[in-house]
Structure formats: C-alpha cells, structure tokens
Amino acid sequence: MLAVRHAVLWPGFLSLVVCAGALHEASGDWREFRGNETAGEAAEAALPTGWDEGGDGKIAWTVDLPGHGVSSPIVVGDLVVVTASSGFKHDRLHVLAFDAASGRRRWERQIWATGRTFCHPTMAVAAPTPASDGRHIVAFYSSNDLLCLDLAGNVLWLRGLGYDSPTSANDVGMASSPLIIDDTVVVQVENLGESFAAGIDLDSGLSRWRQDRGRAMNWASPAVYPSPGGPVVLLQSPGRLTAHEPRSGKQLWEHVAGCAVIPSVVADSKHVYVPAGGLTALTISTDGKPQVAWQDNKLGPANSSPIIAGGYVYTINGAPALSCADAETGDILWRVRVTGPFWATPLVARDHLYCVNDKGLAQVVLLGTSGKVVSQFDFAEPILASPAASDGALYFRSDAHLWKISRK
Image (tube, rainbow, N blue to C red; front, side, top):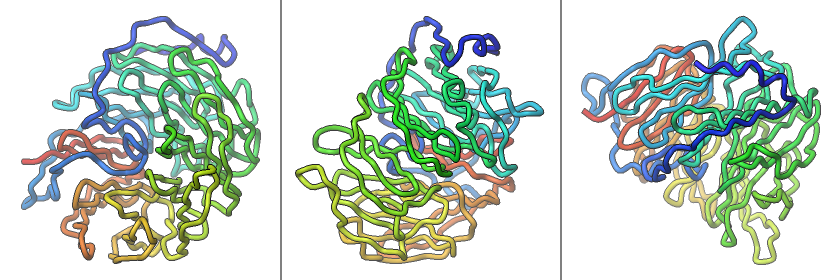
C-alpha cells in the first residue's frame, strides 16, 4: 500500500519520478469507458454467451473488492484495473490491479482524497472509470483527484484539481470519466459550482489547457471523434456539444442543443451521435461545421450511453427497451424488451450485446434482423458499472466483487 498523505502539502500537484511500464498492444485491451474507441464495441471474436449451468461460459474467478465503487473495470495487457473508495468519509481512494488469468491481486495503491467526498448513496467517490494508454493508468474520482500510475503501480503524479477549483462539486457526486488521447488526459468537471474542462500532460501531470464550462449539473463523459484530420475531443454539456483539439483545447465547432446530462455522446468516422432530442446524428461538413443528419426522439437513451457497432447504433430507453437503428439513416430496425432499470452501458461483441441492470441481472441479446434475449445470469448484487471485454472474457464489478467470465 502506498498512501500519499503528503500530497495535500503540495497544492494541486505531486510529481514522482519513476520508470513507466513497457508498452502493451491495444489489441484485446479495454482501456477506458466504453472501450478503446469509447464506442462500446469489443474486438473479441468469441465471448461466452451464457454462463449458467447450460451455457458456454463459466465464472473463471471472483475477487473481493474494498469499500464502494461504481466505476467500470478496464483491461490493460494482463491487468484488470478497478477503483474504489473506503473509510467513514470515503476519503481513502484505491486503485487495484488484478492478474487477468488468475484473479490474483498484483498490486494496490491508496491515496487520501484532497477534495469533497460527499455522494448520494447510489453513487460513489469511485464513479469515473479509469483510463489507460498502455503505459499509464489514470484514475479520476468524484473528489476531483486525478492520479497517474505506471503498469507496475508506481505513482507518477497526482493532481488535486479541487485546489484550483474548490467549489467544483455537487451533492450527488461527480461521475465523468477521463479520456486519454495520445499524450493528453482530458477531464470534464461540470456542476453548479466552478465548471471546467482541462487537458493534462500525461507524462508530467502539468496542465496544457483549461476552459470554463457552463455551471450546471452534468455527469456525461468526454468522447473521441475519429475525424479525418485526427482524433477530436467531444464535450457534452446540458446546452451544447463542443469539439476540441486534444493538445491545445482549441474549440473546433459547436452544436447548440438540449443535451442529456447522464448518457454520453458517441461517434464513429461518419457521424457524431449525441443524446439530444432523443438521439441526434451529426455530420461534420468539409468546412468543419456540424449538420444534423437525422434525429429521432424514440431513440433517446435513459441512463446508459448509446453505443455504435457494425454500422448500427444501440440505445436502452426508460421502458426499458433495447433499440437497434441504422447508424446512417436513423431508421429503427427492431426493439426488444429487457429487464431493467439500467445504469450500466452495454457492450457489443460481433453478434451479441451484453447488458446488466442495476439489480445485477446480466442479459445477453442475440443481434441480427431482430433482437432476442438468449441468456440471463443473476449476480445477486447491485451493479451500476459497465462490463468490459478482453481476450475472450467478460468482466463485471459490483461494490463488493469483480468477476471474470470465460468460455468453458
């Protein structure tokens, strides 16, 4: 355990000089919220489609987790990484790394929160999903503490962003996940207090840019748009969606709309799909301006973020029903009833979609000309975290446990 108590003596910044871990290939990894491209599609050919008694999968291992956490697991090489918080005030922040093959705990690091840790009981200080570029692991918390480690668990730097913006908090808790694009970490901190987005140098922890945002409650996470000119950061706020250069923060364009504050924008190379007016697909013209390609209020997601896979867009509404639409036209192809309610965002791997509701009931949907729920498994614990997929296995986490599901 490494408890960095002296971080509070260095206002806003702690830097430790250590060697970074070796690079890991992205293939098979699940490195941030909604996967490597923040789109929700796994590069897995054959994930288990059921892990009850008659299914083709099994629970490979289960490990206990400390404290409280609703952040999703990520997978980097042979590590499965989760965050948590513990203590009476939930001011002890954890990063835990487990061996993907065995479930053995490889390392754990703990720091003390430097910002506000009050959260609604259904939320957690460890709500944002960590992110990785294959060499670094970045963990972000509702306390606005941003921690960077290497793959061996060595602390590289720590930023207490609350030092610069002490009013940046709300009574429910912050949940926006960090995004890594090349060598920049992007964080989005929007609330009724001081709201901002910032780009942080991944190697040094120093700020590259910072921009004020509107003062309004918002839990949406930044996403990446793979534009022809290179990756672009998308920042979704209650009244607008903006696009920025990752390294400079320069605003490239803006789309004014009443965007949702929980489900997050998603994009592919053709369109940007923003939860606004239901679901709105934007086309970015050659002059860099967004134009509405289509809009459908029947595709509006509830709490789960939309995902893109194989030319289709998938959303789960409040009914709850899973909808599949043609990503190019917005035409709804089919709907299937699923058992909810949902907070976790699903993932797609080839011809199956995996979702888990907030009671812990996992459901596997066979995709195609019409959706069909083909298997279910009850983890019997509340699950708000989105699943992850890597190397033919699925990972789910609750407050108390982390599970690996593999093929028999």
